[in-house]
Length: 107
Image (tube, rainbow, N blue to C red; front, side, top):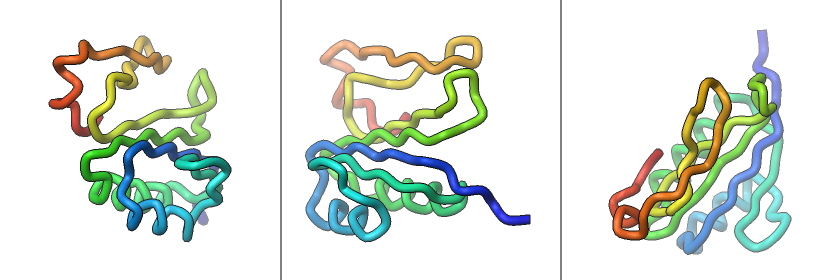
């Protein structure tokens, strides 16, 4: 039984050129730092591992189609004020105080 492809979007800020080049191999760069594609769960997870390992001082967000109430799921990595928070099965975005942003690596 094969894994069904799902739409995914990755947005990076302050990403190293090498990571941006790798993402452009797998996904279409619709705008600067915005990558779009459709892959299986396994491939999406592999791409996200690459992003997490190479993001450096930058940050990234991954959103993909999922069978949730909202129809998608979100993950982030790197220092960013916006972090996804689960509220009774629905994902909302929360803002960290500026002093906590440097410590927020992976969520």
